[in-house]
Amino acid sequence: MKKQFNVLIKHYLKHRFKRISAMRSHPIQEQERVLKSLVYRAKNTSYGKKYNFKKIRSLVEYNNALPLTNYEDVKGDIFEMMDGKKNMLWPGEIRSYAKSSGTTNDRSKYLPVSKDSHYKNHVSSTWDTMSIIYNEDPQSQIFWKKSLVMGGTVGPWKHNTKTKVGDISAILLGKMPTVGVPFYTPDFETALLADWEQKISRMTDICADEDVVMFGGVPTWSIVLFKKILEYKKASNMLEVWPNARYYVHGGVSFSPYIDQFKNLFPDPKFKYYEVYNASEGYFSLQDRADKKGMLLLLKNDIYYEFIPINEMQDENPTVLELKDVEVHQNYIIVISTSAGLWRYIPGDTVVFTSIYPFRIMVSGRTNHFINVFGEEVIVSNTDKALEETTKTLTAIVTEYTVGPIFLDVGQKGGHHWLIEFEKKPEDINAFEKLLDKNLQNINSDYAAKRYKDMALKRLTIRPVPTGTFHKWMASKGKFGGQNKVPRLYNDTKYIDQIMNFVRLEK
Image (cartoon, rainbow, N blue to C red; front, side, top):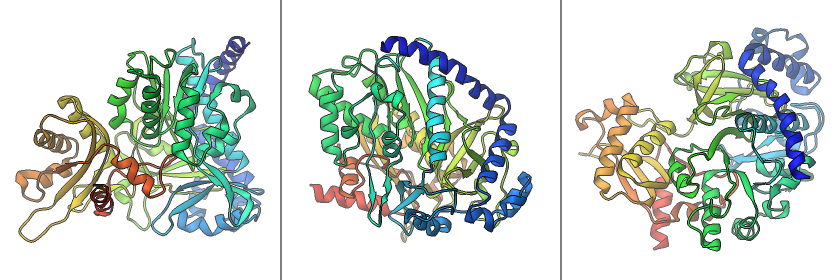
């Protein structure tokens, strides 16, 4: 029966793939339709009345009427919505809120997930992802065998039990379309457990004996689970456990530091990796060609996009570009308007376009994850790439890393301090440091200029930390599992100091 159902789904997805073709062929027109629809549906909300949505007729009028916003600007409205107030940022009452990592002033931030954004963005984008996989591999068996799902947690908000808050993965899992339920493992009770150690233990028992063809999630926590399963099954790689495994859908962090580990876990050259950009604020893009980098912007899925050149990040009135005005290989801050009621909202991610017509992007970092203490302007994509090239040359494998500045002292130069957790250590850490520094200079000309003859910056330094350090440190801060990710770069020594103190206490 499941085999026949897979055939039916394949026909549906073949028809649905026309949406992908439309986004590739008519991107500007699709975006104009999305914006008109968003503005029309929200015209009678408090926000729509405040900015006179009824009179907005063009992109120019929209840009002139509405300000750029961030979480601090809208969190007051969001808390009122969580209390049950209706028709504020989006029509009706919104009862689901994705809990995301906090801003400067908040440990966590809560982002609305309306019914419209759930179905017309997140669910729709998930089907788009399936249509791409089946288009590239018509023999896919995703709706015949099993896919592994590792959700976060969700529960009632303490001030209003009708309001649910949690990881976006858990919110989506709790509302999964019925058609998909039989094809996922483990059971949803296990997938949504709050205790991650208990969750991984139960998932090991359940999933180790399933016929899994696809899995998804943040790489860090996936690797933790796979190592537990390998130990449990006494296997050398995951294909001995799941011989039909073919696809990994990943996102949230750069995959570069993890690729070698996954190739060891799934040693099949035909195994395919698909990157997606599925944030708490929305499902933005997906890799539409498994063998080529770059994610296709999803331009029909209830999100309207604008972009700010990254060199204007600190400007009071930055230039805001429409999609038609962007250029390839330039860093931009992404700006979104969505059916969750986020209007000209800046999530904090930076992207680079790898192509235009069709519009494909790569996530280059976060606006608050960079190091620019000495004018070097190093971002996460720089460090990821430098590390990837170095590990390939010196056959090392990195599990996790974070980087902070070394501030200038009297009679000394500044620099960068790397904390790295290795799965396979390089034979010569000094040679690794030297090559990593050289690769970073080749990638980032500003860093190279500051490193010239050691005049402004000394060579980066590496401190290897014990196996498991990053997982234990995050667990100690209540950030184990789910959407939580290791901070890669920070413009002061905050995370370096915390982790170093943690290592000392662990001894």
